[in-house]
Length: 80
Image (cartoon, rainbow, N blue to C red; front, side):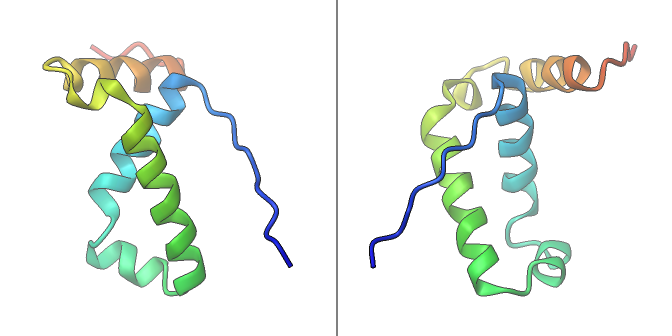
């Protein structure tokens, strides 16, 4: 039986923040302890790879500033 595909829609800000979190977490002890299911790990790896291929901003020289701005827009917080 063929697998059905599922489309997940994220805003650019959500995608950037999620990509950053996955990049920092994957392979860490905390991630390995939390994600102890190979099937879940596979799905998260697929999401991470898709985000990496889709987000030009992760290679921008001002990536840190873009990421911080995205976090602020998502949380609605005005951090100084």
